[in-house]
Length: 320
Image (tube, rainbow, N blue to C red; front, side, top):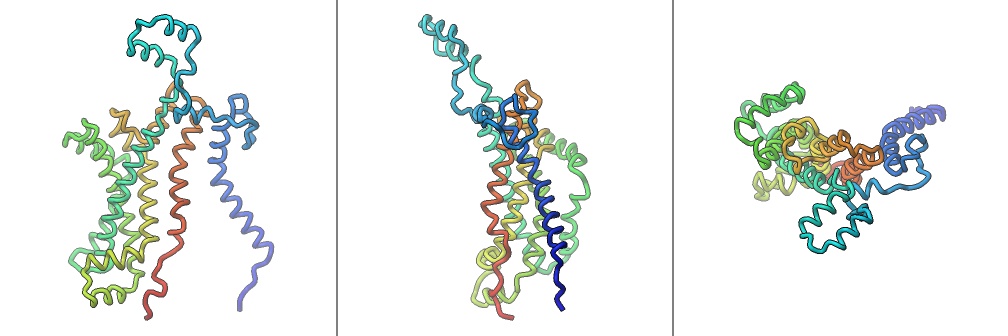
């Protein structure tokens, strides 16, 4: 007998879901609202700005800034002094440039993108092979290795920071930009690989083994089976794991603040945002605009690949 849900329960459930959604989205809306307000409106609790102010975004993205703040007297001096060299003119004009370089979004964005994408890609690649061995192969110590990879989560990042830093210092990697970047990449892979193995291993077990048997009967190799059978049928799980790894690396600050502290050109977005907050250019609309720019790529990525998260593609693949 099917029980009917009362209208009151439906309403309460709807209000609960609405409250959770509002609680989750409110900080982002508040951040976006503040970034679009003029200083006179910062104390206004309304989420809708009375007048849209895009100056903070233009400054951070260095759009249309140039040397528009150069005083007229300085312009006249430059025009009436033709014997100044190009380097001298540039040195004078640089003093009056806008502060659009305080948060070089493009540089920090590319650093974060390369680091996060590389870490996620390598992690997913290793996780596919490792998870397949856990779910399909039988060899001595398989269960021990499968459980042992989760051992890394028994320790917090702050406990692993000093040993890892000392290890890479002894290797001489931290003193050079490429070494520091590679060290951070390895740390992100180690951080995300265990849960990736766990997630993909559980998903691979849901794929009927008879599909692989049919492929092997047709002459497919083990790697051919993984490439032609396992990966296409597990695309939703693989995309989910990739997004998870990407977001972990994208938002990570602790290890990046230590390994990249001496290389400002390699700063990631979280580090750049922290530097902006503690600089003399820490203005609310600029801070909020930088926060929006930092959060937007992950939101766009998630919404773009959301259709791949609906479920697997194994339904109808075999008839048991």
